[in-house]
Structures are given as C-alpha cells and as structure tokens.
Image (tube, rainbow, N blue to C red):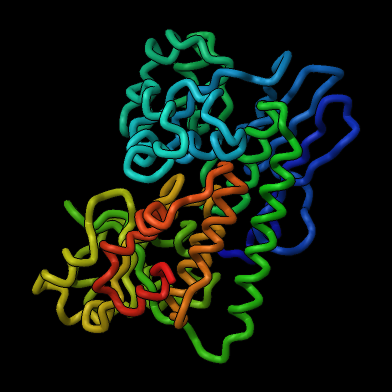
Length: 384
C-alpha cells in the first residue's frame, strides 16, 4: 500500500486504566487520523483495573490485569513485544523464524534468555501446535487473524489477539498499541510512535528536497531456491517509494498479484534494476550474485549495487519497530553519502527500544558491513 493511502486508514485509540489518558497510534503517514475502520482498527479500554483490547479481527479481549506470559506466532511479534516491554521477561514462546532472527541478529545478545524459550510452537505456515501452546498456559497468544489459524487455539480455551498484516506502517502502530496496552504500559506506544513519526517526517523532507529521481530498486524476499520479489501491497514497495526510488515490480511492467511474487531471471533482466536488495529470509549475499554469470548484465551487478538488508533486533525487511532505521539505510543506499549518520542513529534507537548501546562490532553485524563490503559506497556505513 502506498503512503498516501495510509491517511485513509484507521488509527487505534487506547484508553488506559482509569480512562484518563487517550493515546492515538495512527498510521505512519503524516496527517490527521481518520475514523476507525473494522479492517485495521483496534480499541483498548480499561475500567478501574481491567484492560480491554479490540484486536484487528474486531474482537474484544479483556484482561483483569496486565499480562505476564505471552506466546507469539507471527514472525515480527516476538521482537516487537520485547521492544515495547524493553525486556524478554514476558515472552514465553515464539515461532521458530522469530527465534532464528534473534539467534542470527543481536537480539539474542541483548536478551540471552530469549534464546532459551520454546520455539517449536507452530509450523512454518503459522499453523499452531495447539498442545505445545496450551502446555505453556499463557495469558495470551498473538496470532495472525486468519480464522484457520486462530480458531484451533480458541477452541482449546486459549485467549488470542489476532493481527492483520496488510503491509502498512499502520499495522506496526496497531501492534505496538495493543502490546503496550496489554502489558500495562500504554505510554510506551506513544513514545515509539513519536520517534517513528519524527524519522518519517525527516525522510519525507529529504526526499522532497532532492532535485533528481532515485534509482530503480528491486527487493528479493527470496533469492536461493526460487526468486520472489516484493510486488504491490508490500511494505518494501512502500519504503522504496518513500525514499524516492522506483520499484520495477510495481512500475510500468509490474508483476501480477500482490505480496511476494515468484518470477524468473528473464523478468529481472528485462527490468534491469539499478539496485538489488537481498532480504533476510534466506542466506543469499551480494557475492552470490556477483559471482554468477547469469546476473552479469544486470545494471545493479555491473555497478556493484547489490546489498544485504540489515538485521538488527529483527529483520529490517518487513514492518517492525526498527523500520525507521531501514528508511534511513535505504535512503543512503539510493543516494550515497560520503559518511552516513546511520551508526549513531542505530545506537540512539537501540538505547530507546532495548536499553542497549551496541558496540562497534555489533553495529557492523547489524549492517552486514563485511557481507556488503564489495558493494558500491558501502564504506559510508563503516566506523569512523
């Protein structure tokens, strides 16, 4: 979904215990919030002590007190919960792909206890292992809102908050608002959104001030074992356009359908993208493209503009709490700087999100400085 469309989507309204404070966590686009819509809205309210949340299915869930044990199945949810909580203390189990991102990134370094949690509680397609989840007796299970994924959990007597993923910044804001409310920390949602809005405004201002068009940027969600690129209605398409680039998969010769769409090398050769982004959902690195004769005539390969997307507390590819850092990174990839200020921005953001100051080595790991070292202008992200 394009950024202009976000203004027409709903925002979340949260009333915390006592009803004295209202927090608006709207879409990532600038502009006033609009009336709530069933597809993307949630309302959390509380009486004197209880906490009620309306999830993205439109279902109201009430807790007598802040939750203390949470099982997360959607991949971004585990690290998002930790960022909202600034702790892994209330995370009880997670999807294996969430756990792998913690292991491969630095979340496991910041919160080593998270790596000891159960992570075989759902299949790759998010179908829950109901008996494994029920054995943990969590206060709440976070799950994608598809009925076939939610109903087995609810039929087993478990409380479920359903999330939708329509590829928008609004989803991130909605998830953060619900997580903050259920943890009894509604003010945290306001803090995170204020940070995100500030960074979004900065990116939009810089993009608007440029006198030249940006490069064509193709994002691969999968590269090894079959190509998949970000097509219409993806968060990747949103941020490519946000920084001033164009996405060939949604441009004059678009891929059919929406989401992550399969394609062949011939299609990429016809597009001839100027920049290629490799996501963190497989092991492909720039050297794999540079060394393959099939790709040698692609503009991005000829100019050495193939980059592995950073991996921080979570993957930067999809929407999440570190998305503002992705916007800045991609802006500097599309329009290289002599010296990027991203390292200091990552440090500030990690202190805010996780109460952790990353070391120089951790910053190099997050930014894949070794894996991207043979790519053009990547020295802008090196330590000074």
